[in-house]
Image (tube, rainbow, N blue to C red; front, side, top):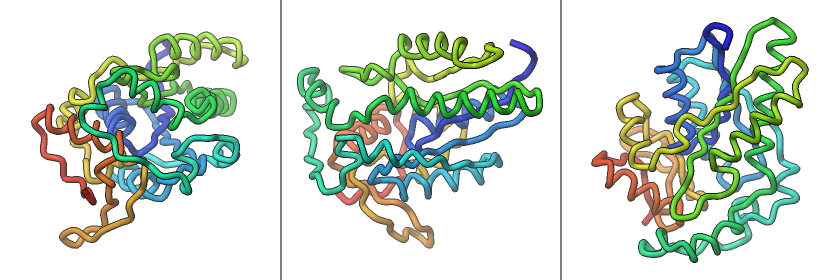
Length: 248
């Protein structure tokens, strides 16, 4: 690696990606950093966008929004089809491997994480070609339990790094997910240490509007989808108060 590199951070507004952004910004201290957020017609776009705009201001790094809405057009994911109902996930089903396997395709957008990383890599290569500055690409994916999605694993990252060598003219870029081996409660502990404003992170799959809380406009989590369930458990297991607003 040639010197202290800059960073392209792919950010979604959730606990994992926002904590990764704070980790990269505050502990890795890149020369420059660009936050990149994609619109792929996810039903929670406006809540994620709201949170990321607050994070961008807090970190003092610019935010770029990317149009990937065509991905939502071809996806069958519940996340990109607001007409589809999101069922409540019971606490005991969160750690049931069979139930987890059944849920994966409900949330799977075709090649999403690979596309996001290629978007980040394109920006990194552009910066090097145009101004000779090296950027690495970061993403907040994490190996979920009990069953990981294929594009949330160390094996996926290794393949994307191999692709980066062949997909770019100069090569030498690094694609990284620093928290990929962390359990979610460990992510919460790290984020708390780094000063992540948890009220400006959004995990809900459903999207539940906004609410004024003590003079602040905050996004509301449904409180019953599988992602809300994992979020609640992570804060509980980390021993950290969750300041987020839940409808249920």
